[in-house]
Image (cartoon, rainbow, N blue to C red; front, top):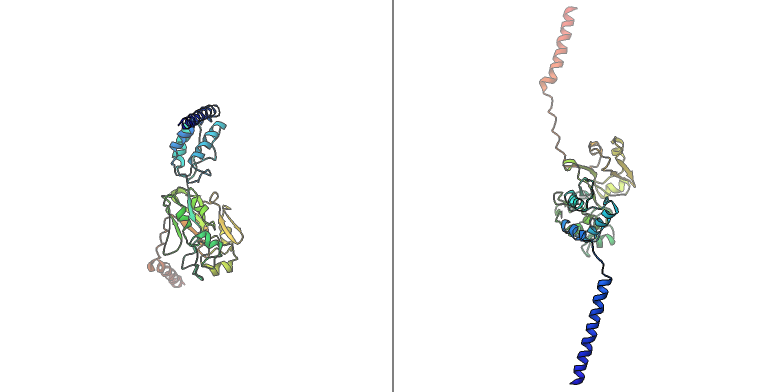
Length: 305
């Protein structure tokens, strides 16, 4: 019994000494966290989506506080919260933040089941990553959407869904927070963040096929063939052609939509533009009046003669 009691006392003493040592060490080497970090975290939406470039809202908050101490938080931004949230953070940190134009994810592929028919059947793990690793997919286009929906699974805001009729993802611009999760999930990079534009109006090339025109056209009837007609008609130098593919710089584009009308394959689309009213056809009477007038004039000339 004495041996057991001695053992308990010895172990208790060791535990007590260890606790004291740990307490002293924790106090001596304690890292004090800036209380502003917790305050910033409370303002942030808490999505932890990584769209800001940091691991989560905690990492973003720490970067914002460090930036404020350095004198600038420019370039550090929460895409989910947008200007309202960043305004609150700026007020808390006593900094100024510039307003930025809202962004939205766009799907740069129009390879619907009609435009891009299936030529093979993939029988494997049904993810875009797996299908892309195994080849060009079920169609002849090795650049377009694979249709497995990796982007829909990556979206934490239910802003992107697969259309069963077209086989392509569609973005709900009202729900999209431009976090960029879908762009990272797509192995073929067909989803791009672009400026939402005034009244939600946008013009962009809905194709990423870099094959030569004849090859691209054979695999998809709506593919960009790199003909350059859009580039020639653009007066703002917003369109460039590289690797047989046209691209519109949304910072230079003035949305005149001339390129949309000029594209022979319909690869360039415009979104949320008002439908142009059809011009009324000239009436038969209006056309006939000048002709009748000319006949009367000739008759008068003959009578004078």
